[in-house]
Length: 319
Image (cartoon, rainbow, N blue to C red):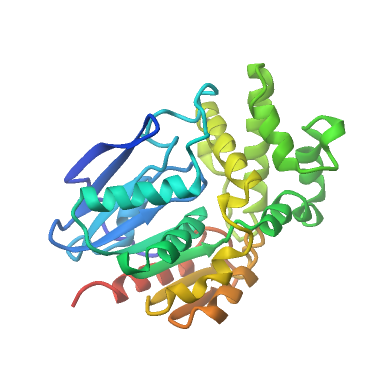
């Protein structure tokens, strides 16, 4: 396995009131006088786990993690069906990032994101390019309607039996329409049993469509019904709205990233997030380097992907 930096604990943490009845958990690790770096976790809804802290030299970086609205240690919890998601959108998250930056007294920071965190990182950087010193992105996504359709329907050509189960978990009348919408409706059903079934089957499919690389192991987080419901509610909420972004806007506005050095790391076997998304972005972002990793898949699924991300964070650490 790639040698990560040693485990560390936060030297400071807190809850930031971001409005709309939301408070987001944040923490800082590493060197208080180091180069600031912001972690944007995936999902949406995964939360910023301690693994992220180990991707950076703790002597060189001031590492900032936060749990996006509704997940992790932030409140209210999207796992509660009574928690409204109306004020949980990409513009809200971008505003939260800026509020956190100001709260911590940071002028600019390196931003790292994985999967959904890439979409959020790109949206933030295109809106606030002067606040981003570099970008390190892996498992590149733009959360377009085409990508959502790919994951929820077209991937059935790769995993036909598993997809049939995913499709057949929704009412028959909804099976030929948007499966994201169908699952979102089930997750909002007043019957807890319907909610639980939807969350379980959604997360079962999530485990399948990222399983294309060697040595894949099921994600143990999906064994927790509380996590399943939170995760499924947030993913379907964001996906049914195509990330709350104008479709194709991230690629169209990539010129705003000019002058921001970046590294994108992507597995060729990432069928869940096809490599062409990263490739197209690299064609219009002149300061980005695209690193395609042989037989590895989604996320930090293997040694080479992890090493490439560590090499990127080491490259950008202060001299």
